[in-house]
Image 1: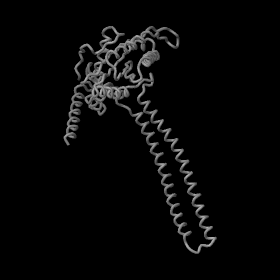
Image 2 (image 1 turned 135 degrees about the vertical axis):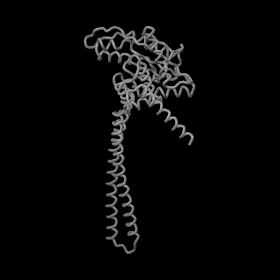
Image 3 (image 1 turned 180 degrees about the vertical axis):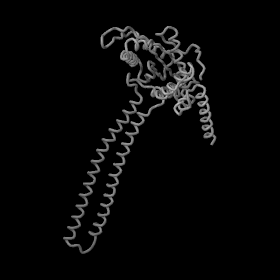
Image 4 (image 1 turned 60 degrees about the vertical axis):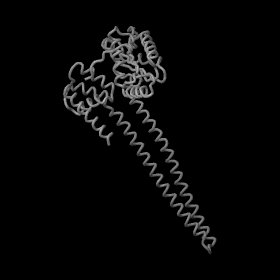
Length: 351
């Protein structure tokens, strides 16, 4: 009882805090706005919290800000519907199998009853040759009927097995799509957040090192404005390619924002994370960006990186905040560099 009361009190406290923030920062008391603010105060979506802090630093939110936050971080309806449709098909297929099995069981029970009756008849006295022949004929006919039914069942089961295997692959593909950034092929925001939570929990519980690298492409808006969005996409793919070339198998590579990338390194200490970040930074800088349509050289791409190493008091939100702050320090210090959280960081107050 005490636990349930505690959970209820915490829920009420979160709801009250969400209402206060919705009143203070606006824009309106809509269900969508409440969902955004409640998720924010609960700390379940670190990237949403990060985005809210950036927006509230500029003042009150607009309806368009709430719509963008909700659709970017909380709306997973399309893939949820796809998974629901596939699950419904699987259930229908299973129901079909059960119907065939029921028919088979009924046929088998009927066959058993027929054998019992025929056995009794054969055990009777005074049977003539004709009657024995008649009973054996009935037994053969019944056996053939059951054999045919069993063949039908086997065929249906084979078909269903293929169908269920196809549906299983469809579900797996749907889940993969829901966790993958379509432009770069890296993990998306959803997978990044899930993996970030898991990594921090494991690090704190087992007292093992873990590091987070946050990457931001320098002057990315200029690439888009001057050369167009296709070239901007080419820049993002280049950064993703370099990340794959240098990162170990156990790491999680993600694109979780427009030009923002993340690398989760469970088991990596500060020195390992810094060395890896520098390899990625130098490799990106060493590539020449060429416009595919014309062959024109577009110069060098550079990135700024921030590193945070897990502490015993960390949550996913706090680790991401420190890595983000380090990345912004790298930007302020001239870009094209790596900054880690070994220095004392001045974090802004949380709204």
